[in-house]
Amino acid sequence: MTRLSFGASDGAVEEAIHSNIPTENLSPHATSEDENCDQINGSYKQANDDGFHFLHEASMLLNIALPSVVTQLSVLFVFPQTASAVGLEFGTEELAGFSLGSLVGNLTCLSVMVGALTAADTLMPRAFANGRDAEMGRLAIRGFVMCCLLLIPPIIPLCTMMESIFDALGQSPVAASLASKWIRIYLLGVPAMLIFRCLQSFLNAQHQVMPLVVGSTVACFVIHPAFLKLLLPTMGFEGSALAISLTQYAMAMIVLVYLLAKPVHKSETWPGLSWEYIQEAIRLEPVLQFLSLSLGGVLSLSEWWFWATVCFIVGSFGIVPLCVHTIAYNLVPLLFMIPLGISIGLTVRMGNAISTNVKKAKIMAAWCMAFTVVVGAVVAILLFHFRVAIARLFSDDPEVIQGCQDIWPKLCYYVFMLYIFGINSAIHRALGLQWRMAAIIFVCLWLFTLPTIVVVAIWNRGGLDAVWSILPCFYTLMQILLALSYLTLDWDQIAKQIREKEVENMLLEGHAQTKAKKDQLPNEDTPLLYSSC
Image 1 (cartoon, one colour):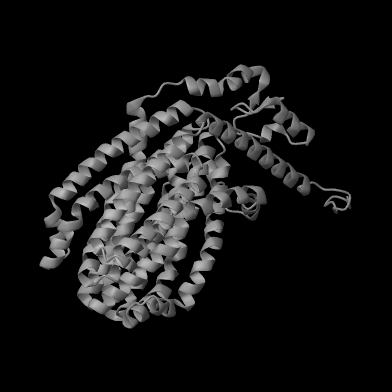
Image 2 (tube, rainbow, N blue to C red):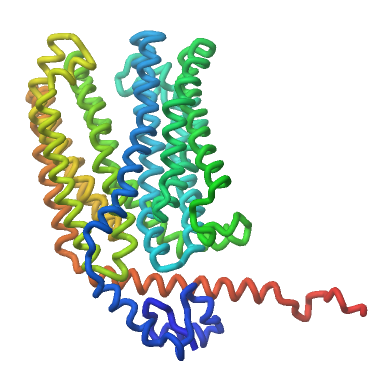
């Protein structure tokens, strides 16, 4: 008889035996009881007894975090590049159309993709840490299929009725027409963007991030400028959308070619694409588990939708407030790349450790939070010190510069809170608490912050200054609630549930593999090739 290496109960193994599931199929680490029983039963205890080696863990995390920062900056920088080229090549109306189109396109497609793939970011590190290598590929396929299904509802209106929606929202008719045409071309690049995001989750979980760095930087800083120079003069405004779409394909292709030339991923994590492997990936029970985490992840990114709503509100205050807010709106995502990179590394490392070493996972979370708080404070201080110089990078208008100075202290504090938000989000994802995080974000932002902005900034005519007074206050409250959310939970119980789920998944995989083998065996209704001999 054999056992699961991370401590499956005898009952689970006996159930497998009574179900005619060969226990050697349950785990890639299954060993003979006579040889390794003591070692297997003590594996979980040994993992929890291991000390926390700060330098080693810091090195492991930074090896993921720093390249992730570069990757995320490169992916994001495609859009400011294009905006600059459109503004210089055409004019204000085209720039407004581009801003509107890219805002809505990213708000819908990218938020759905990133949110849905938080399920993969949660489950892949766990599978990899527990030696379930083949599950990594299945999770990648599952994530791709799930994103395709979740993207259908927003893509239909994006293709068919955006101009009328923009008109109903009171946008400029010219900008609305340009944006609706731009979005239809932009959508051509969504499949490539999805492939890149799935590869990102797949490689991050294995600590192999260099293909992503190469793909994103080459595509952003070499290929995309060439596309802009070629397509804008020949196709006009719509060439900017095609340039972004083609850059997305180039990014995905570079990563795939890199992996073909130098397969840095573990070979067992991708045994090859086959119909049988796809069937394993889309089995109902694991798909439903993935869907639950995905929907929670998408809802947790309602913060993106909230920000877009705030932008529409600020647009009603006039040109100068909108320009001031646009400067802040462009700075925030760029500055957030640092905590985002750290959060990606933390999600992976905590996901690797949580099921076997809760103490280690807690220490990693605490150190990351402390480090990010220090970094966030430094960034906020520097942002305040260079406030005038930064504002002048965007505009020379004295009213705009003064407006920036008025909101800047609040913006700096908001950025500091955003750094804490990045780590709070990572901890929730690592623990599989997407729905809990989504509920807190939705209640704080949509049920309290947005109504307060409407009352104070619009009805009471508080304007932009009121908006930026309200945002930091409610984001502070949200961070307190998010921290209490995971601090008040029993992490040991979560780890136990993760281990039990891993055992259950292995049993299901073993059953599916056994059934497939039985289906391939000849029976009395199967003609034998040698029957005529």
